[in-house]
Length: 375
Image (cartoon, rainbow, N blue to C red):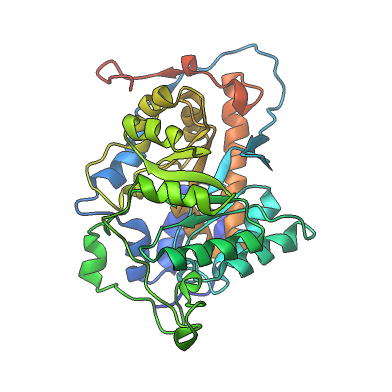
């Protein structure tokens, strides 16, 4: 169950992220494809993430004379070239031998933030170093996604590694007190990584007898707001909560002093039948009332999807599965192609909507079908 040899010419031939997925499916072991593409139970939420964007219409302005849009935005003090981040996804070396290093180089070259997964098959130190290769040694544009472990001592050890690597932001997944039931993986018997691969960030460092050995990521039903309080006292890194879906939780997050929220249903991989992330965004925007930035992931496949998310209150979007499609087809070049496609589509969409930048996208550009409640 290894990645096939990349075929860069196929990344260049794909005209959209959906076409790139078609090419990736031909490259990947079917078990790996199912792991990446699948979700929890009946995959209702997986499909909803995608279809919800299709139900929102854009009504552009004309004769605005704004020129070519400037896509640059600032996210938590991090300048980026467009309002797109790479979402945390596990096990990149299943898609390409260079794994997360290839992804990090492509992200850094494009000037966007990569959120490295705690379940990376490359250690955070190497991911950050790969990003620095593209930025002449400057601070890496890498954030780190964290599952707070029941062993807080081990969790703190990981945080210290993240700090030492030069990352300035922790993205804490809060939607996983238990692992979602992913029936594709059950059917395929996909429970462990192939020999030679592991979650490199999970190696023991603080127990001599186990030093260097990998340990499992543990999901804990005890995860609570006291863990966020502990985290705030443990590190000066910025803290972003990923997986906030209810407006009441958004309010509690503000009280807990977090720096940003990612509205996310984990790509439909945790609790099935949760609404699409884009449907959840407006209510959370209302609860937050501009006090912290909102990001969103789930179902973004076009530049027009990005415009819709911006119009509903997102500061930026994060993309997950498409990055793995690009990685599978052409490694670093494939990830670069994903980002190039989104950048080109976003420029076109903003220009056609009469917007000069992501910052002046307004909700009056959106229309919903007559039978659809505007969320």
